[in-house]
Length: 197
Image 1 (cartoon, rainbow, N blue to C red):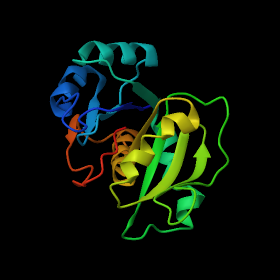
Image 2 (image 1 turned 45 degrees about the horizontal axis):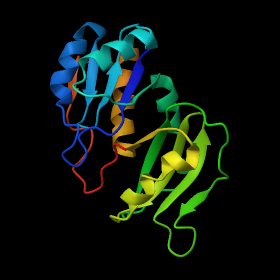
Image 3 (image 1 turned 60 degrees about the vertical axis):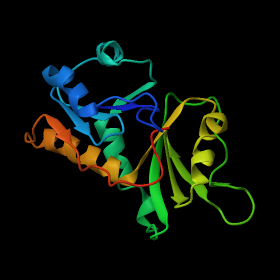
Image 4 (image 1 turned 120 degrees about the vertical axis):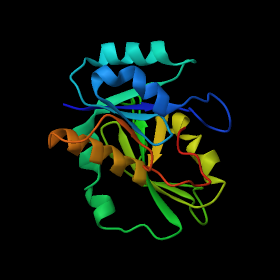
């Protein structure tokens, strides 16, 4: 079963920079696939989470929060009924925030930020460690994403829908017995907002 690795807070604003395409070469023995530039990898050979976490931590030039989950968990989110009922507009972007662990308590959803007036970020549903939401294309959204750690009481990392679809494609390639190791560099178009918090 494929595992998905998400690194929190890498390649953001010129800080904690590294080259994922080169880093994935260290994980060739695990049939690793790099997804874009945000620190997302699909691991397609069997390995324990403990061993995988240790190998990644040892290879990184800095300390980072390492989120690991099963690929099938993320692929199920692509057909979530909340998003199936609603298409994001040109000014709305779908995203998934991954929690490092299940929080002790969950805030009531949906939750919008700001709480009054025109919303910029909306959390619409939660499935285990995964929170689905929408944000508007506005630079203020970065600040609201930075609050999610406090909202849930655990570290959170966020990726947009394009990245999640690229991850699902890499997982499905493994299930079909196809695909190649290496990088999927076109996973996510360039955009103004960083989603690697």
